[in-house]
Image 1 (tube, rainbow over the protein chains, first blue to last red):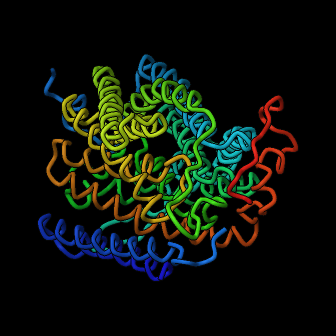
Image 2: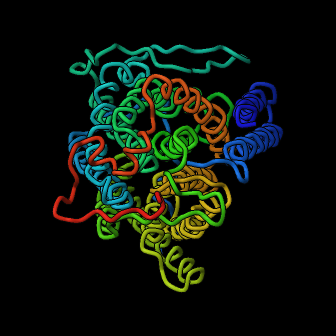
Length: 60
Length: 440
């Protein structure tokens, strides 16, 4: 889970970079940059949940 | 109240303007005050650690920046590209995307560099020291000092130079304005991205790698409160940090935003207003939440206001600075609480919320209030780069580093305290260290 989340985050970054390279107008660039950030946010959520200790698990 | 921001149009010319002797001398003097910000954060880190780890915490506050500046001088400054003009770059869509500086190693052209480049390099030395120090507070009471130094070396050699080149030294984020018409490119006058967001995200990677302190999250019930040992250190650190931050933001505005001298008083006023608004907001939030204001959270709020101002003090009006600081002061204590209680993230100094989240918030504020179209998009692209590249990169580097130099002290060391385990003596030898009931 945690590694999957951390792999999703660069995918969101590449989406924002692709938006800059592919779209000439600022409006579509902005839309795709926001989408890229949303993907990164989802990856971050997955990574955070992946690092949370499971209920009842042995803890230090 | 003046409705104009200190810098009206955030000019970022393709070639640096020539500094007069007076501006050079003033900026140098400001940079010589900037280490007070580092001293303030060091006191906060130490005060929020336990008394049995105080000497180790303060020694780490010296050792990590020391290692970071040496490694940056030997290797990192080359990759940051401050003293050179060559860089490693991609050519995509007819544009040049500068990725990594290829300046001279060991700074051997420092003597012949322009005064602007020398000031920029000095600023980067302060910045890399602060960036290395920020995660140290998050690893309090369990992060070994040798591992902290190794982490500082990795940050100074790889991660910080990468971000510094992208943002400050003509890399692809700095060129977003010239290449894609996005405002003046990614703006970060005081290091909200290169120092604070980077440091806060590094702190997150650290607490994930090292894990929580023993007894912090018991199998049943809420997390255990492990308060810092000296609230006076923490609050005095806030005052000390203010002095350093005033100088830091003013120097950054001259060096990276090419602000005129007339913009510096406004930048300093905005810095103060942001911190003050954040403190008032945090004081109110904790008063409402807990019935009494919480000293350590108020310190976190004050620092969050300063961090927010790092990005936007030179670009916002005083009213906008109060708004930015107040928002940071409201969400910081709430985020600290969510991280600890809901997400089981053990961050003793609150660096993830204070430096990470507030740094990112400051960058957004700079995009909202900077008077150029497309500036907000440029800021969001920079934030995407921090989240999508810096955090996974640091996590990967830490995972490898943890196998070479174990991050976490052994359980016995954590029980007796980092001072005795790592240094052989405590910070307060006359005091009796109380038995910790959570180890029974």
